[in-house]
Amino acid sequence: STQSTWVAGVMFDSLGDRDKFIVSGLCGLMGAMLTIFFVPNLSELDLRQGDIWWNHVLEGRSKYYSGEAVNPNHLSLHMRELWAMETHIESVRLLIQPKME
Picture 1 (cartoon, one colour):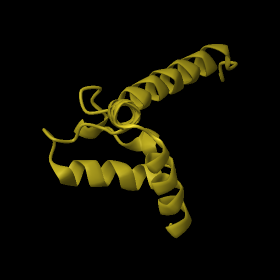
Picture 2: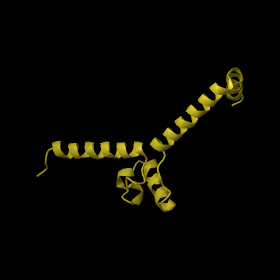
Picture 3: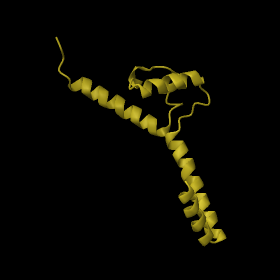
């Protein structure tokens, strides 16, 4: 961490004020985009539901959770896409799986 601080210090010392402003703005924009794409919105949700869902995810049982935390309004954009892809793959698998009689 000391080395990364040193690198950041050297980099910012060599930049002019205008360039520092641009670099800082780009870092802020990248942070906002990462937040939008990867952080779920649990602000309107009971946090216990979020904890229950994450425990299911960590245990590899996320497909068995059906609570409010998997409502697309609460998922990150990345999780919405993964969830849709997983649902699609599962439905295709069920369609092509030979029917047991």
